[in-house]
Image (cartoon, rainbow, N blue to C red; front, side, top):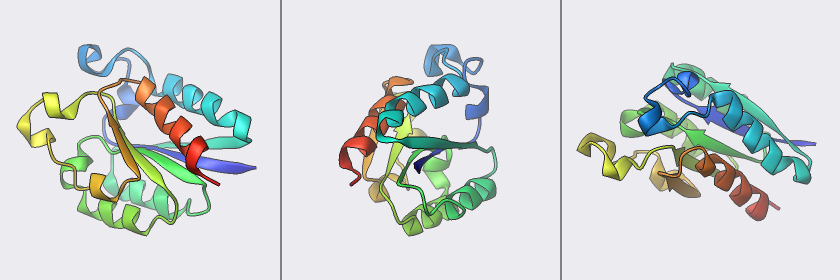
Length: 143
């Protein structure tokens, strides 16, 4: 059996309670279950990690090079998470960047991601559905 890394950054551990008008009412546990449902037919499991600390996210990446791919919501670390970027640059599998909200419809400081140029794809603004779509993309593209 193979694993998919589901990585969530700062403030995403409080989904469902965090500004539901922006981020929706799904909890992180709901999202983890949804991703698991999408990858299960392929025989894959989900390794889910959420950390508010960039260093812990880097450790999670470096400890999971043997996964088939990753879904990453870096939260605000997309803006200046240069160490996270370096870790993802070395991650040997495809990965997708996901954001619940449409970052380009929000404050201008959210309009640039230092991570997106490295990602296999980026999904924004579709709420929790974005995670399902990222999981489907991995299932469809990973040999």
